[in-house]
Amino acid sequence: MIGRLNHVAIAVPDLARASERYAGPLGARISAPQDLPEHGVRVIFVELPNTKIELLEPLGEASPIAAFLAKSPSGGMHHVCYEVEDIHAARDHLVASGARVLGDGTPKTGAHGKPVLFLHPKDFDGCLIEIEQV
Image (tube, rainbow, N blue to C red; front, top):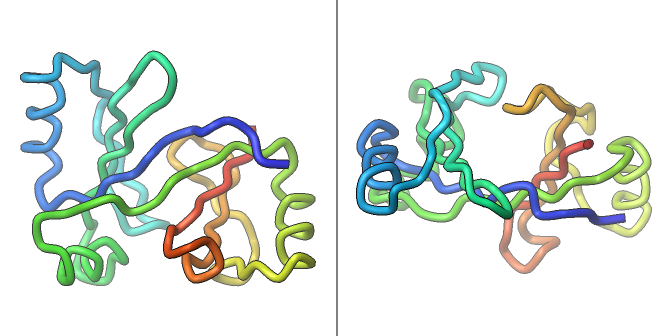
């Protein structure tokens, strides 16, 4: 069921500064910033030959990333995203296997314009998992 690694997400307190660090010293290609109000974040993608790094900053105090940064002010790894062929079938299989889907189980549109869901980190060794339909 699980497909390719789509991206690794890192929460950052300052998206512009983080972008400069990746573009400057590392010479990475960076996407334009994108606001995702439904998720409470502003994101950019660091484009790599084999995957992407998503840098996230909060869009307001109610953002889940604001809560993450309150605990880890300098930022840190937030989640990993895997691709799935059919997000509804993947959700149903995961739930039947005992995994918890965050929210009401209805996919939201992610940064790539595709349906996404998040899985509870306690069910995956402390790692928040995002699944994205390809």
